[in-house]
Every structure is written in structure tokens, then in C-alpha cells.
Length: 486
Image (cartoon, helix red, strand yellow):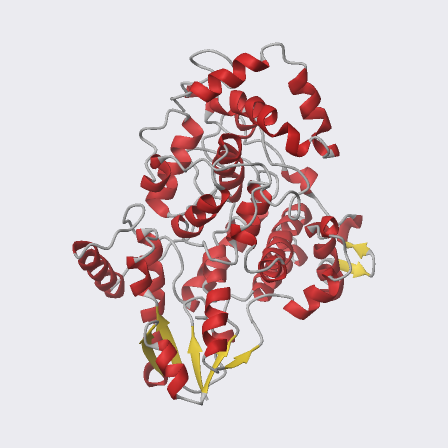
């Protein structure tokens, strides 16, 4: 059998020997622009994998794939990671193998989820089930390491006061070579022909081969995992990576298997090189959250990303978002993160949730458009990873299937968890006036707008009560309707 390999199946755990047909999907970029650095990463990763495999590999275009699947009866494929790709291989008769690259399979998740009310499909329950089954950080059944399942409370420290960075060594980065140069020339030629990309070109910042992915994993475990926990939710303008791993990129390319990533973290804990709170927090991201959103993509159905608008949001994204331009944005935190995404195609999770997502939630941006933006503008954005994160967790557009409450917060949160507010045009303490913070004022205006949709949510009872006590709430709402600066 010859095996079709999609662009997110590039690691050794997708190769059982035999001929491999690597799918080049660059033609799709003409119809749906993606970040320039994401295009560079995908194309260089594909070419490098083909070079590694030598005569065993051939590159085929996505346009030729349907004919190839129809004409040959010796094609197999590991289950693809999107509805569209699964439809394609299913329609054309390929032999489809079970999915890989995750800790749990779809049948296991379905068995766990079936019979539960939708409100009980919470990640924490799934995470505990996976840890118990896989014996990860467990001393025995119902006996988690350290006596606690979750160390979130220990991992919510603000950034160190008076420090511009965490003081960690520079994060691992690849050394570019002639393959990158050739890819860059080809992307330049595509742009000259009219193909549009999001963001800006720049040095490749992420692993594109198996060896590079292992180097990035080793670097994280040695230098960042020991500091990962306490400031997991903090932001520093001069420290883009902080203690985060950036391993979502090689994981989503299929260059790393999540089990080996977890094993490396556990080895560091066992050796006394990383504390339990940080290791547990990292493990939860890999075998808890990542597996969970993967399964929700299939379990919630193919229309999930386009059929939910619980909070009545429909405003288009501002032009600065699609331009990935922070220069015209006055809010220091939002300007900084938009510029970062434009320059690198990446931001860490709290910047995504509490700066970008929080702003869109407050402003009522169309969740379908926002999901597409996150998928296309981020180097680790995939059709399966973003819907639960954006539609559910960030925008609460599904009414609580993924998150039990909207993740909205005012400027006080950003001020506490970052160093952005000190030199900002806006004052996080103010909700009215020319220098009223868009996040602070926006938070109260958001609660006022969505109260009819969320008044039955017990977790929102206290914030809604606080909103009702504001004597100036009508003035705040009107000012936010008229706001032109943010």
C-alpha cells in the first residue's frame, strides 16, 4: 500500500514503511489567505520531509489527490484531522486507518461522553479520566501525585514586579538554510502573482523537522519547564515566550507525539528538575486540553463552528485584525499582541484568550469570522484546534458546551497580569472619559448587552449584580457604542 500523508502527519509515527505520497496544499492559499510565516513553515516542513524520505516519497498536489484516490486501489491514509479531508478520502475509497497523534482515540472519548449531559462534558473530568487510564502523575487509582489533581491556583501568579523578562535563556530557534531560502523565493513569486498572505515575513521561528522538534522539546524541558507554572497566565511585553513551550507547532505538524512530550516532562519531574505544579499544568495542556478539543471537533459535529451564536454577536472584525497591524491601535496590550501575531504568527495562550478573545467577546465580533482569523493567522491554527477554543472557550457562542461561563475581564485583570498598562493611553481604572480603558468600559457594556442571555448562569450572578449597581451604566454603554478609539 502507498500512504497519503497530509501536511500535519509529518512525523515518524505516521510512517509504517512503504511509499509515502505527501500532499502539497499550496493552491488553497489562493482562495483563503494564511499567515506568510505559516505558509513558509508548512512548505519547508513538507519539502524537508520529502528530502528525508528520498525515493520512498513523492509530492502530489491537493488538486490531483481525488483522481489519484479514484484511479488507484492501493492507497491508505491515517485518518485526517478535518471534516473536509475525511470527506475527501471517504468519497474516493481510500483505506482509512485510525487517527494518530493524540493520547486517546475517538471511540474512547465517545464512550466517556455518551450518556452525559452536554453541561458535564467538562475538560477537568476528561483530564482526570485520561490521567487515571494512562497512569500519568498517579500513585494509584484516585491518588494523584501530591494529593491534588489540579495546581491551577499555584499557576496564576502575576509577572515578577520590576522585571521586563523572566530572565530565562533565549528560546530555541532553528537555523535557516537553503531550503528556507528556496521556500521564501517561491512565496515571493506567489505574492507577485497575486496571492495574498496575512502578516509579515521573518526568520523561521518554529521546528519544521523531527530533529528540530526534538531539539525544541529538549530545550523547553531543560530551560523553561522548571519556570513554567507560576507565571503561566502572565504577560510581559519584552518577553514574548516567557516559560511557554511553543511545542503546539511541531505537535500539530505531527512531528512530535504527545506521549513523548509528556514522558519528557515526567522525566524532568522524577529527576527533581521541575516542580510538580508546573509539570502538572503542562501535562494538563497536552493530554487534557489538546486531546479534549480534538475530540470535541468530531463529537460536536461538522456544523459546530458555524452554527452557534448564543450571545447575539455579529460585528465584523476590525481591519487592523486582518492587517495584523498594531500601529493604529492605542490599547497597549492589544496593539502589542496584534503586532506580535503579525510578526511571528504566534502568541501564548493567555494573550489569545484574555487580550484578543476578551476584546472580541466584549465587542460582539462575529465568532465564525473570529474562528477563521485564528485558524489562518496563527502558525498552529488548524480546523480542529480552533472551534472549541474560539467558538466555545473564548466567545461562549455555544452557550456553555465548552466553558461554563464567558471569559470576560476588565482592564484590572490585564493590569494585574501584565506590564502593558503602565504606559498605555488608557487607564484601566476608568470606565468613562477620554482615557477610559476599552477593556474596563467594554466589560461593563458587554455584561449589559448579554444579560438576557446569561442571567441564568450562576457563575455570572455576582458580575451581573455588580453591573446593576453601577449608577453610570447607561452612560458607559452609550460611550462604548460611540467609541472610535481602542
